[in-house]
Length: 204
Image 1 (cartoon, rainbow, N blue to C red):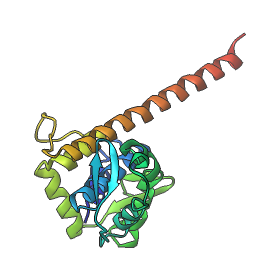
Image 2 (image 1 turned 45 degrees about the vertical axis):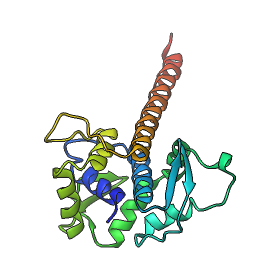
Image 3 (image 1 turned 180 degrees about the vertical axis):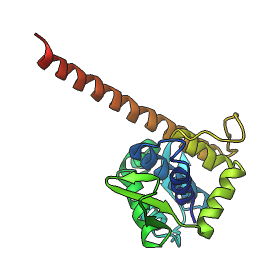
């Protein structure tokens, strides 16, 4: 399992308590993938730019896809910024993780399911992967807790913000927070514009 899959499971498991937007979750999943690639030595950060390092082929299919998407050889000044990666890789990423877990039999379609994707309702199966994710969550593992907090899932055992002790990881987490806030600002702006347009038609 990866941090991204653990995050998806926690978001799904706690959806009845904390509603999570799929766009927000997709951005956080992209951040979780990058954290794991940093941990595996596949990439390093030069400031806020992602620099491919060792050729690593993760066992996880989605993480391998993420790694492959970062292996292009470019001049240092053209290395992708973390925030740009989040938006590029994060596009519809929550749906990709849903499909991966469903294909693996870790999600089932139930009328009592929790997280809604369109008309589908999904329920987590009781698997070792789910128990691992829950154990990380209950242990307040800093990276998982910080990513969950970014999408609106607060820790249940502590009011303190989790603080990872790795500078590169902290950079990624800060970028995730900024991207989620930017997405929310876009939603609010569109909502205001839609309301203003509707008011034009309602005006006497």
